[in-house]
Each structure stands twice: as structure tokens, then as C-alpha cells.
Image (tube, rainbow, N blue to C red; front, top):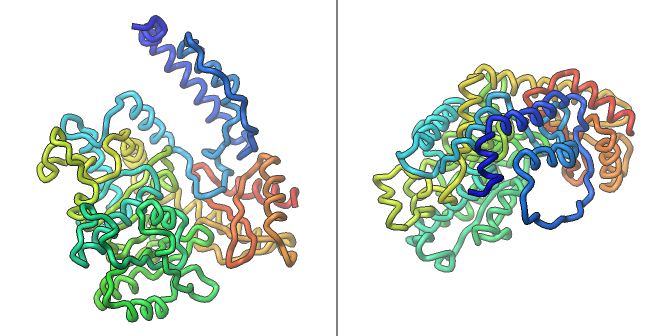
Length: 461
């Protein structure tokens, strides 16, 4: 054995203590670290012939790189929809690396069984019927990809074609309908060979990002002889708007379509009695996306996909290697997801669900939404900024009060805010207006952080 490797193994306890020290230093400084920063490209060095040991690598990382990480796990990072990592989920994630299980495997490990248990908990958390089959994937993009792949198989079978075997060239027609589809949907269409231009955009309701149901039904009526895919939104990224899932579900009694619900973070509305009505009807879906490394606050990467059509999922993703066994008799996830091997990414979710239960995660969601409402009130009553949409849950979409704002002005302003270090926001565009969005999804965020973030905006205006 390599002498450095042997030494590190012998001194693993010291190494883990050293690593814990680096992590603790970061966590203890989260309230003071810059929420974000701009890092220039580093000069690339050559791989050393002789290593510096694990101790040396940890020391080098701590000295040269740790202080240049973005504090995206901190309480005032409001870009994208980025949760942090709860203490329990960190413990789970460290054990994922220590035990190093292939969670796609079979009953030779408890890992797949714990994944099923975690998915069962999550279905209860989100009010998703037990009939749905679920699995963990890397993020909302791959969850949407998997769901649309199954939908593509369904469209083919409606026309007597097995896409998994015969390919897209045998398919005469495929259209995907949505109003405010997330960019990951469009990316998935490209990866699946369906094509970005297969997306048909239906108008939204006035001053909303929710689909106009009358226009949707008109399209379905005009194309009722064709199997279609509808992507419904449960929480849009700009304004957390929700399509009427119950009404869209009722349309399935009249028209033939696959309903996919993109509930990447909006699915967490189900946790709170205040917001649960927003996802009423989600069980009409044929497939559902929910992201864990957003509002569940577990480490990257983790998301879930759910479907009522496990049989179709098998036709798409079945691995045919003889040594992998019969999928009808095997619980192996490599027959149902793009990966043949993956880390045990369900474990951090299991840890945080067991540690804090439904009550704990409901409190996070409701506190984040209360903080967003408070921030929205400050924006609405300020002289500098104005809301572009009501604050529905945890995202605040706003812009400058002055007229004729352009994208470069927003970008320059947000760069100043970023370099200030107290908070971080991302730019967006809402119905043609250059805008700013603040997404509240971190387990640590409080009203004190709202005040600090708003003060940073005012001082940099």
C-alpha cells in the first residue's frame, strides 16, 4: 500500500477531527461571511507526483480555498431557491461518504430499503398518494428529465410505438404544453430528443404566471385526437404562482394527456395548512418533481421523482445486463433511473426528516414565507423599489421604482450588493420588466436577516 495512504488510514481519527474543524469554522462564521462574492479564474497547477497526505490536503484547502467559498448555505443568500443543510442532514451526508453505498443496488445493503422508507415519508409530507413510485435523482432537472422520458414512452404507446426500443424516429407527433415552464423542462426536451420547439406556450392569466385554463382547453379540444404532455407548475420561480392542478386534473376526464407537475419547491406548500390548498389536485398527476436540496435543506445533490406508471419507467430505464437480475424480481433502482450507480443520497433526507419531523419542516417553510412577506412589505413601502407581483409564498419579485429600467442597470446594482457581502439576490425578467428576485428557503433565516438584507439594498441603491 502507498505509504501516505497507509498513514492516513492509520490516523483516520485525527484526519476526521481536522476536517470537522474546517467545517466548524465555516458554520460558526456563517452570520459574518459574505453571502456571495466574485472569484476570478485561478491559475491551474500541475498534478504532484508525490502526494502531500490527506492532512496536507485539508490544510491546503483550508488555507487557500475555504475562505473563497460562497456562503450559499447561510441565512442571507437569497439567490435561486437554495436551502442550506440542516445539522441532521450534514450528519447523514458525512455518513453517506463513510459507508459509500451504491444506492442503486439490491438487498445486499439496507440502503435501497432506507431510500424506499424515505420516499414513503416524503409522500406523506407532500400529500402524494401511496400508489406513486418514487426514486431519488440529482436535482429537479434530472427529475423533470426522468418524468418527461416516461411521458415520451406513454405518448409512443398511445400510438402503438415502443419509444424505448424503436426510438423517436418512429413517432409522428409529440407536443408539450405549458405556460411558464422552468428552463430545466426546456433543457430536458433537448436532451430527450423531443426538441425545444416541441414546447407549446399557453398564455397565462392576466398579471399571473398561472396558465389560462380556457386557452388550455381550447388547445386540447383542437388536438383531442393526439396524445399530449402538459407540464403544470406548482410554484413558478419568479412569483411562486400555481396552476390550478385540480381543474387541469378534471380535464383528464375529457382529453387524453399526460400531466406532469413541476413542484420543485412549490410542493412544500403541502406541509403548511396555510398554503396546502395551492397543491390541491396534485394526485391527478402522472408524474411529479420535487427538489430536496431546495426547501428540505439537505446537501446537494438530492431530488425526487414520482410517477403512477412504474411499468413505463421500467421500459425506459431497464438495464439489460444479465448479471443485474430480473427487474420483475429485483428492487434495484438502476432499472428505473438514468444511473447504474449513485451515492446514497436519500440518507441526509432520512436524517432531517427523522430529526425534525413534519412539525420542524413546517416551521421552516412558514418562517421563510413570513420573512418573504416582511421583505415584500418593506419593498412595497420603500421609495426606491416596487413589487411586481404579490408575495404568495417565499419569493419576492421586485424592481426599481424609476421608469425605463434596463437589464444592465439591474446587473450593476446587484454586483454592488454582492460585493457588499451582506446579502445576495439574482436578476430576472418578469413579463418583459428587468427585475430582482429574493428566494427565502434557508433553515437559518429570520426577521433579523430580512432587516439586514433590506438595509444593504437601500445603502447600495
